[in-house]
Length: 409
Image (cartoon, rainbow, N blue to C red; front, side):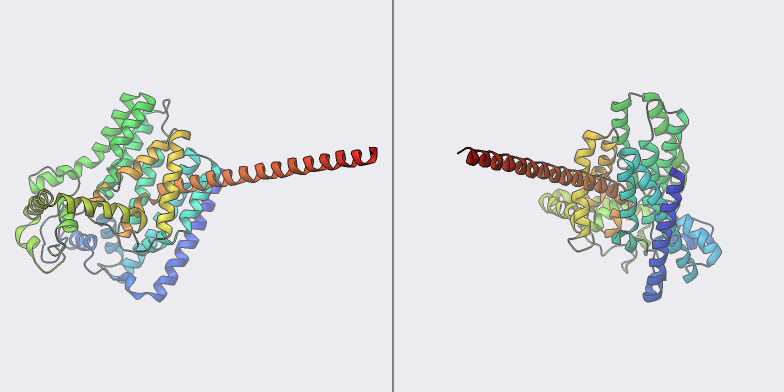
């Protein structure tokens, strides 16, 4: 029965998302333009030079600007459909739809596991028809793959119980490692979640295995970075650079015309941005704090430039999370994703697509919030109906007493 429902949700999601993609490909020609897409540039280097490099124009050297998962997927499509071709772009947009459809199934599973079948089904339907999700699927970027990766890691984590087998902890750790190879920001809630699981289950050995599995998955890429750049760089190089772009100036971004990155090299450029942004924060702490607060507000309330659905979802998700941490053993796990994932964007800069990877969790918690509100409304209606019924009965009895008194007189 559950497997049949999974396939129905998958088919429904694919139908909706591929139909929207076909429509937008027909009316909007720019969707298939690779432009200066960093992953596309790296994938081009992988195909032509057999090296992981060339993230930006006139910079053919090795890079760790992006972790390897997404550029490798793009390179595979380039090998089949042509380098930076329209066919490769269409193939990747279709793949985005497939990623998102599979995520819908995982969203349903997470909601069902943490709360109820009703919450699972509602959250999956909301995910499928989400306007923000539909827009993100039309972008040649890693957002849909990141959402799928995090959803899988969360699903495998919330399934863990004190009596779970060691292999389940291994698989969960490997899922977190794969998520990190898509986007390191996805690992932000990992350690807090481990701590919560330890406090809850007291399974130190199993959680150590989970953590080691995650580390083992990312270790080959970390060793590659050390061999190439001679510095410890677990996943990607550009963390300080992104904070610099968001607070000091975006003018020196490697995709622009300054050529500072190209002339200095990646590691020297990142070190310079680190020095400059730390100096800026030390000199302007109030301004930095104000910018950070504004970005935090925009992340939750205004990521697309309009106060609307994202803000409503944020309110519902935090309302649901507040109740979830008291009602569900995994409610805190979901809440930690909302708390820790956005921190890097609070201190750097915000695009609407940056919220997409955690929107599966947002929709699960929002759906839970909706069911709580619906139950409260239903309960209030029942109470009102009972009060009305009691009043009618009381009025009837009063009328009978009055009638009886009149007849006696």
